[in-house]
Structures are given as C-alpha cells and as structure tokens.
Image (cartoon, rainbow, N blue to C red; front, side, top):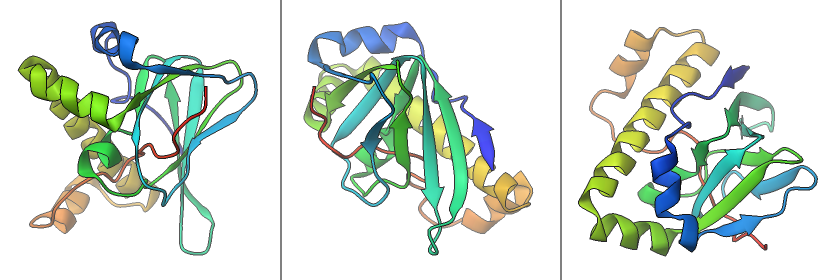
Length: 167
C-alpha cells in the first residue's frame, strides 16, 4: 500500500534552525538513508525531491510504503524515542537532503523552547498519520485503531534515521 506524506512536510523556518548544523547528503542516484531495525542517529531533512519509506513485515513482504516530498523531516519519531528505525528510507535520485545529528537536534531543542514545541507537534502529527496509514493498510477504521492503542505507549510507528551518512 502506498500513501502520500502529509505531516512529514514542514515549514522552512524549521529548516533554517539546522542550516549550519546539517551535513549535505549526495543523492545523484537513489540513496538509502536508513534501514528498518537500525539504531537512529539523527534526522534527515528532505529539502527538494522525494523519498520512499518502506515498512516490511516478518516475512520480508512490504507492508506499508510512504512517499515524502520536500520540504519534509524524516526520522523524527525514532530519534526522539531513542529506538530502532521502524522504516527503511530511500531518497530518490536528485533529491536534496541534509542530515542533523541527534545531539544537535537535542541541544537545539533544549536551548530553544519554541523549537521544542514545534518538534513535539511534528512528532504528534507523524504518530497520528502513521496510525492512520497502518489502520488503512489493514482495513481498520481510525476509531478502531485508536481503541486498540488506548492505554499503550504510542511511540514512533513512523520512519526514523539511523545510518550515519557520509557526505
């Protein structure tokens, strides 16, 4: 199942905060940004172009496929939740991508409370969007999905970041 991204897209003000702290990622061909199950090490900022995020099931079949278009943040839930990536992310050839280390993201959030609120809003939107995508892919309604997770910790069911990129 393929779903277009929505909450992954964010405003340019967010990107400007990390402009001096980000590392450019060369994408002159399709490029794996991180893999499902790897440790998240930072976020990827998709300035232009697109990326595909895949979540595979136990038998290695593709369960969910999300498409992010710039400007987007990729990998936020796993970085903030400090857990392995739930998705594999592949930037398409020609995409303009930068990487922000987890420490830089955390330090920026701690020193700028309005930024922290913006990041938490993005995280909440991504978690909600992922819940909808999962419930849609399995034929459940949003209400049934919400009842199913009630009382459980709802963390990063979306995509994350892991592999330390090489510029």
